[in-house]
Image 1: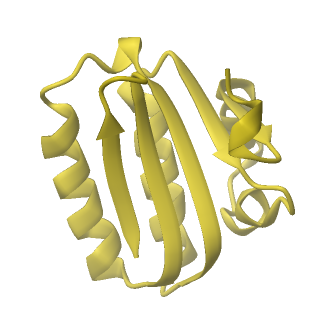
Image 2: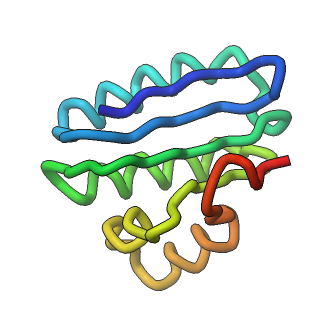
Length: 114
């Protein structure tokens, strides 16, 4: 399951990823996410992605979702991934991985975000 939550007071968008994610779930999330952020200026917000233990029906789905986040234009993006499980499971190409790691800061916990 993928859930999104906007915290107006903190100027952050939180994304939680956990459980089993089917292709249908990923597509539905992308559609809902695009509608949700339509009302905000993403360049004024920070994106925080917090994955728990999860499995994907198709690894390309999680890659597609992550690349959609990159295209949105957030001020800063954080990935709470202490074991680096998500980055290893995304199966990005060399250039995509470089772009992703340049744009996203991988952190150990939410406490690090200022």
